[in-house]
Length: 494
Image 1 (spheres, helix red, strand yellow):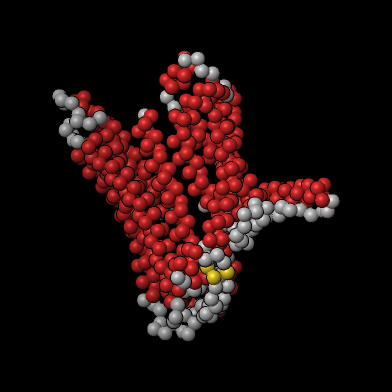
Image 2: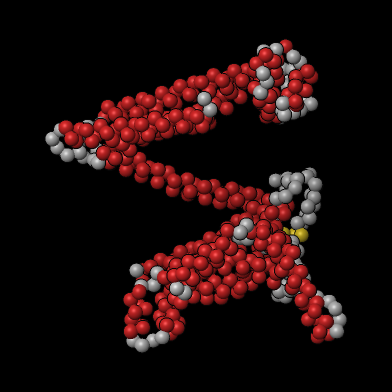
């Protein structure tokens, strides 16, 4: 059976165990005097967990270990000398052998029976005809190794099917045998659910820690080659890519990249904050339910547009528009035709990124404003204040901590943006205060440093991890400040 068929069979057994355990618990409650410790639904969940969890855990373990054991079994047929092309890279031999095995599986049974008699030169055209190309370095000894892999996989699949479905049936039978009046099914089911929640939290924490440490170790390698002061306070970015094995040096100043990141994010926030905040105030305080039900989803549609689409919009529409209109203004003022706004500029990237951020600001601010207690509104209106005065003097001050935290979270989103900056602001690492010129950001340079042929022993590649660690530190600080403000807000207004 395929893996998906095994999972469906286990789920079917688990559902049947749920129904049988629930029915048995209800029958016991009706036949015996006394009250069930747990509701019949908890007894059903108890049966479902016993039928599904051991079987699915065994399936996961089998799927992890089986390829490892299959590779070891396949390698037992490798010759001692793989040849000059494969001895240094035995993993390449494994890949070619697995490809041959995959092609043999697709063959008709009559042809497969004669494969062991074929040399690789005769087998390769047959496999290519089945859509499985074979590398020219393939050897004749790979054919029996591939047949050994097929035999192992077939045996493993059969054994896995028997073991997993057997565990599901055994678990269901065990759970049904344990159903009784005083079975603490609820406690046991809740313990399993609690374990799932702890596991999910642990995975999230370990994933974050893994990302941080992976960047940290590589960044430490970079700082062994380039002084950290040169990186943090350098004003020139010139990595000077060189071929592997050369000692070409470069300048890895963070200042132009950090300046571009903050400048473009600042322009984006200048666009997004007023529009998004005013839209939130209108929807929360002035719009009727019909208008709100239309306007709010339309605004949130912007959040679902891929950032690459915003980049295209900036590249082919906003950038040329700003360049052409600046040329017309320059012609009217000076009589000479020439644009003072570049098509790829800080202004272009900031405008388009600001449009992208509008739904983040409006949606978060709208939720925060509507969460302000109704009693504050009623008290202000009852004292004779107008609706606009209530919004200005009561609602916005009450919601201000939450709005500030929302804006900080939106700022983190702006700092981490890549595709819009690549297409709208370019890749030039400049230091300028002119918003009509091009700059670039940290995220863009991370992409450029990790593109192409990489040598992870050179500072030109390792600098990407130092940039990533810097960006992580910035966004972490913003998120921590935002969470702190949210907590203070909840303590004050809940």
